[in-house]
Image 1 (cartoon, protein in one colour):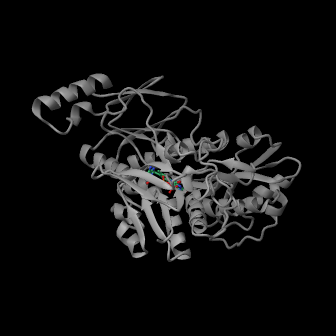
Image 2 (cartoon, helix red, strand yellow):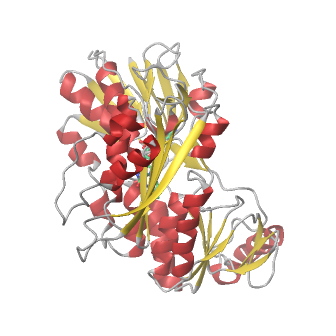
Image 3 (spheres, rainbow, N blue to C red):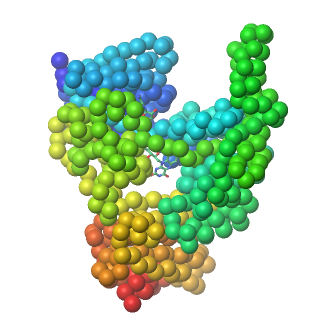
Length: 474
Ligand SMILES: Cc1cc2nc3c(=O)[nH]c(=O)nc-3n(C[C@H](O)[C@H](O)[C@H](O)COP(=O)(O)OP(=O)(O)OC[C@H]3O[C@@H](n4cnc5c(N)ncnc54)[C@H](O)[C@@H]3O)c2cc1C
């Protein structure tokens, strides 16, 4: 019998692990269990599918189970793993289509169950028109709702990157959007002075931004409570033999916050994402301080022959020098690849991250890497920062756009700690330069000496990154 690698979760981390293991070991038996109806989907593209930039969801699906089968990888969709037995090296699950339970053995196991969105148990949370966004099914449901119900008012809960992307997507359908967040600023990964630019852009695009507001409940047109709704619906269905609820009366109509009532025909939860550790933790796979699965640089867990990768796992933060939880697609792919290589007998490692992220919100690109000033200070660094405004290209070029760069560094050593860049043009390539500098452990002086390319259509002769580093050196 061939050695059997089982992977739980069939998206970025899981399928990267499967592909790498297959390339390393043609003889390995590889089985992937995925509880949704799809594998290898690009969740990052969902907001653009919902916005209608991408018309066909299939374009976001890199591989189907049939395509995986051609690589001799067996991928079972609609199969949820319910329990892992590390001693017997078995797992148990259920086929969600048929309800039939299954048990399988494994020799090596990769846990790639990602993150899941838990909706808060607020009154009215189950009204129609309230969505979270994690799976293909979620993306399709939101798009269908927009097409069929033509919502006019939308509330996005959470002003993080998914909230911002979804605000833009809803606005593209002519929906009047309000973003609600408990924090005092949008994008809490940024320092407040940089987040102000993002809020200004949202407001310029007619998005209402409600900060320091807590969502308390959701109500339908008839002001029914959730309990009344459920009871009535059950009685109605029994009485007339319906199998489907009559959604019209039970659709969301208003969002109640601690500061008022917001009208809404659609609500998107852009918050509440947590590492999906339940099955692993119940089996004794240790989680770290962040709540995600603790792994070493080879993606090994505390249990022999069990690896974890992606949004279910911690990753080492190269500046904080400790495990952190930064669930991004880039890391999931890299960690998955390492887990797959090692589960197939290799000894690959993944060094860690500096936390680089970029997001588009309407006309702005918002990028960050390393630590914000506030985070660095809270983490105990003696922190200094500079902020400069510059042009993305030579100022006389018609396509040149303003850009703000904030560099965060250690006061005495000038060691770089992080950066935030906001603008309309050339933001991504600049943050990547600083991310490389952070990986290299550079100071602001070393950054100011880097030999960057210049011609008027691409950059000013003093690139904004160099200007910021020079100012920091003074
Ligand atoms: C709307 C959106 C936009 C995003 N945009 C970006 C972006 O622009 N850039 C970026 O870097 N990242 C982005 N991300 C984050 C990125 O998508 C995730 O970090 C990445 O998908 C993590 O991959 P993963 O394979 O670890 O986990 P996931 O993608 O969460 O996949 C895990 C899979 O495991 C399955 N699963 C869970 N439990 C079980 C079980 N018990 N049995 C069987 N299957 C199970 C789940 O159904 C899921 O399909 C975005 C995420 C979302 C939701």
